Image (cartoon, rainbow, N blue to C red; front, side, top):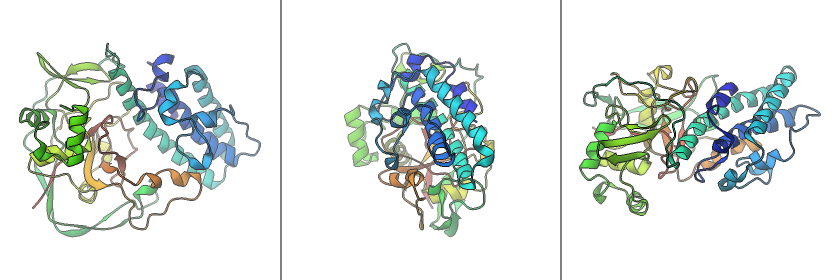
Amino acid sequence: MRDLSVALVAPLGDADATVQSMPDASPAKWHLAHTSWFFETFVLRDNVPGYTLHDERFPFLFNSYYEAEGARHARDRRGMITRPSLEEVLAYRAYVDAAVDDAFDDLPRDARALIELGCHHEQQHQELLLTDILHLFAQNPVEPAIWPGARKMPVPMPGPVAWIEGTAEVCEIGHEGDGFAFDCESPRHAALLHPHAIADRTVTNGEWMQFIADGGYTDPRHWLADGWAWVKAEAIEAPLYWQRGEAGWTRFGLDGRRAIDPAAPVTHVSFYEADAYASWAGARLPTESEWECAAAAHDPAAGNFLDAAGPVEPRPSTGGPAFFGDVWEWTGSAYRPHPGFRAAEGAVGEYNGKFMSGQFVLRGGSCATPRGHVRASYRNFFYPHQRWQFTGVRLAKDV
């Protein structure tokens, strides 16, 4: 699992891995070091007698947001960390990995649980690593590709959306069982559903082009007030990384700039855009309860996820209901605690709970999410204006 992080940065030079393109993104080098800091701090330092830190300066540089761990380097200045070099960060990872391997047999149960949490934490950063590299390279005027794109055969547009009926009922949502889940997925609880229907697939690029052609970004009727203010202030005219030229629409991806595939799921759209599109389409966004109850009957393993370093892109629907992979799906639900939620004791209690304000829930995973990382109860969350992740749209409606 840790090897994948290293493989993802293999095409990068030290400069590529150092630069920070915006405050929401982090340098590749920082992701590699931070995920190692997590294991060094919570597993090795706290559970291995006599453990010696690899470098006493690193906790200040590579702590993310853990107030209990003390002072840290400002998030929006991570791109100023020109030293240590990428090579030194990779050596730090090797040092921590070797120390965990040596100590593993003698670690208490709680420490082994932290290793499991750390592995899932790293999978989250593997996705962030890709989306942050994509955003960084999109700022470069020559728009370099990280990996060459695979040759694609034309794919027909999927047929009209089929609606999955959901009746008024009490549905159980949230994690249950012995498998891993993040704290924000629990406890399992009853959710009341009203009569509704949810689309069997996500919105395509071609459908989004119709929204644009119909004045979707210039008509305030479909927009929330905050969303319309954002559109005007940021001069938003299309999803992130889209450009319109003489030959039509193109997008920038990890394989460089290419023509947009109208059959593929639209991605890199904000909550504001998703909500406006749903209004334009005469629908709405699903609640997270509606989404989870519909998705629970489908196999997450069947989705298009990150399997190895290489081209990463949402794929066109091949028919039939699909709820996992390709693009994260905005819901209309605020990211708030499930009833009965309690944060864990200690620093790791800061992992999710303190972010339950002002953000919206996304479900299902994306093409950049490591395979096996998500499940029906998995809750991702972002602020409504953010769209540098692989975020898309599934519609719902009242019936």
